[in-house]
Image (cartoon, rainbow, N blue to C red; front, side, top):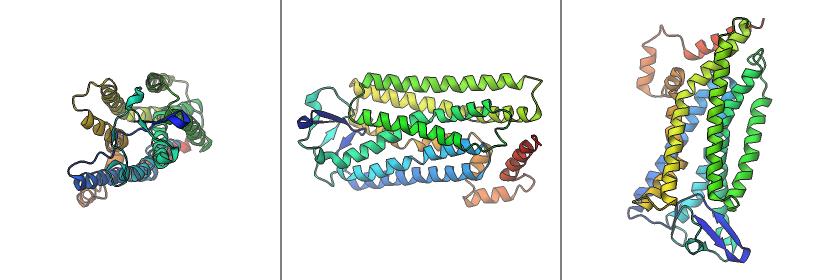
Length: 337
């Protein structure tokens, strides 16, 4: 929705669908939304724990993914601010809109102080959205570094790589967040830029995959180099499922957004709420998509359930995944000796 402050000649773009849109079953909707957010937070924390305690992928790659995913709690803080306005607990004009260029459809406010807390929430939401969009490429860039340092990437920690990737991500995400919330980016430009970024990252993913497949066929590589190539390919192929899930999610969200912008949605209010939940509760789809990329991840992810523990205990001949991963990386480290 777009807010207009004529006294400052300022328009502010808030990335949420409705305010003071009180449903008939208010208590049900509040409890249901609370449940979804708690469930989403649980999935993220559980996934982060599994990724950091199991060495399925390199620690640098795990850190990039986990720190980006933990940013979802920005959404949670923003929702805590927004919910009183959204469900009418705070007196506020009723608004249902994602975006408009028509000044007559914009809600006017005399003073910026009237929307200060909503501005804070919107800034958190924009930062999260831009970080997820830009940070997705961090996975590809980390594997690009792993390919470049093919001789000793597993031997040296190189913590500066995730620091560099995450710092660059936040510099761009903060910049784009400010430009977005202040309506400095035309919608067509912002939408086109987002599509360009995703196409670039997907193209880079397949280029890095192709390079490592080419390296795999080179007979003159040392044992340590072959180990690194195999590790790169293993990580890239493992994330292939998630790449397709992410692509489908992006096209679905973009399609709903375009339906609302061009006023083609048959049920605009319902579509707006669906799009909002699709954007801000996306980890309900992302976490299962990621953990099922690895047998070890999804088994450890559900290991807290009693029946899963019994199932694991009944198969003593299977090597524990942590031990198996540790053996792999020990062999890889010894390859340099």
